Length: 375
Image 1 (cartoon, one colour):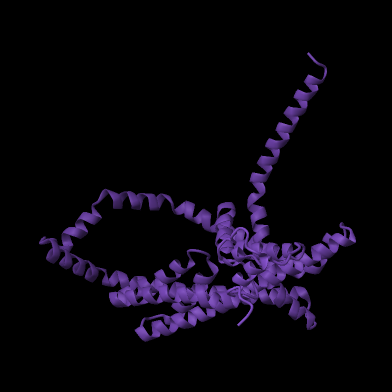
Image 2 (cartoon, rainbow, N blue to C red; image 1 turned 90 degrees about the vertical axis):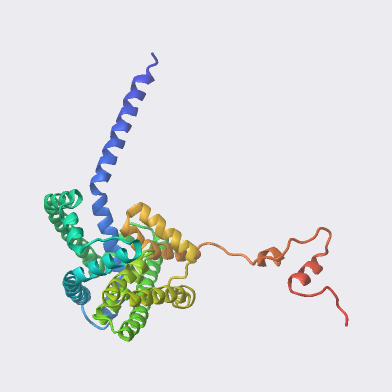
């Protein structure tokens, strides 16, 4: 046996043990790292507001505290308003549920020549095995729901604490980071930080403006239809459709459609049509104009980044994917050298140049000329 083989085997085992230990440690702290990442982007989003307040003489800690208090008051007020609206609508739907069942049963009897009655349908539902199993599973899952809620509150508190530290001690954090880097690297880090603040703040600004426009447009529709809780529904549609990527539009439109259905089923169709039409207007007219100067990324790149972020970090990745990709694109654009594009017709989607054709003729044909110089 060669003398180096035992040492190689021991080294391989040691490397494998270190790899397993590192994987276990990473699995244990992945939740904390995700919370820190969310807190970092939240701090970047509120950095412009904190910076303006600190420039006017207010301490950064107090400025950050006031911004967080404002966000908390808005969030709690929105949740309370939405909860009261949903509670009232659920009570009304429960009271009117027998009417809905009677209308459905009458339609079934008239269409399929049956003789169903509401009493028979209710008895079959109440004594069904599916309903009994569902009640049993719900009773046993109360503890799991409570644990999930407590875990979510603890995670939210962790995110707020880290984001408060990142925003309040932002200059000190940047100095600490730059102190371990050479001057050239310090400039690059500060530039990347500035770009991240601009892009994240621009993303929040553009989304907030589009949420305002969407809320006003849907509020006008809901008022015209005479639906209840129009202000709360408009705020719901504006925020959910803009700040939940990909599926936010469908989630936002589902609630006003449900409320409209309880008033008049035809109103639900009106709401659905308006949501679809407004979404096309937003995608092709409003969003390009508002995001061209803040988060200037191609729609296909934005969609791909959301899909990749969702695959990596779930809903968190979907939320931070677009500002992260915009920051990376802007940072790389500052260092990637660009060249003038050649006058080739294929650049503009034209046909391939014919072989043997002079270069001057190809250029004239690409510019729309007919190749003649004289009149």
